[in-house]
Image 1 (cartoon, rainbow, N blue to C red):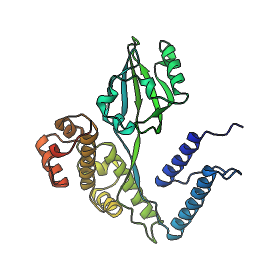
Image 2: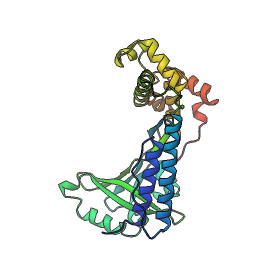
Image 3: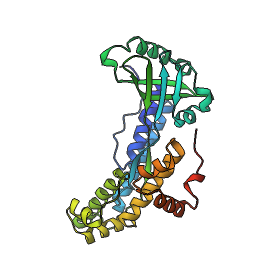
Image 4: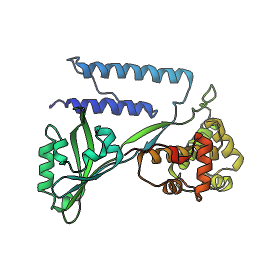
Length: 297
């Protein structure tokens, strides 16, 4: 059987770390007999994961709640000759180039190993219908001569005059710790924790719209206002509205730093109907106006 490449092995290790952070119990592959660097790390990860899971069971604790948060997309726009015409700020940050140095460069010059040949094959088959949205693994060279694995999609336009290289990463956001205890496994407490988690997930998914009143939220989740507020505060140490306010302001700060959206667009994207309300909430939270945040790119 063909052995996985170094990049594939590193990807496996990171995926296992992600599973652990998300509070799940990953299945670790068996370390090889060669006991190389990869196998040593894998054995260490496996041992630490087992110890952590045993500790949680002994203490009857729920793992911390991490929520995946989308980050600014990695997007390159190429012309028919494969030259970069536009790119998002995160491209420059990950590759280590100022945006001005990327625009006009030939995309293939940034690829290493077998990636230039893959790119040539993509260009050669760009007119085929099945290649309208093509997932591909590319390896890019950074300004400091490091290698950046990129899981992306290549999207040629209908006329073959432009190509879009798109990748979206995720980051994990640690929510307030759940308050486990000796009674955390009792049925009523489990129901309260699940209710709080469901509401938290709803809040995170709907940051671009106003949060419904407590009565409407309670109706959606099949409970009453008192139980909903109590369950949420016990799990997250704050009210649902406080959580919503903090989460959308965190999102606003991220959008200001990582995108080219205007401040008004950021406000509307985070559920604020009026810019003045957004301005006051942002200043209260971070101690500075939104306009003072430095913007990348």
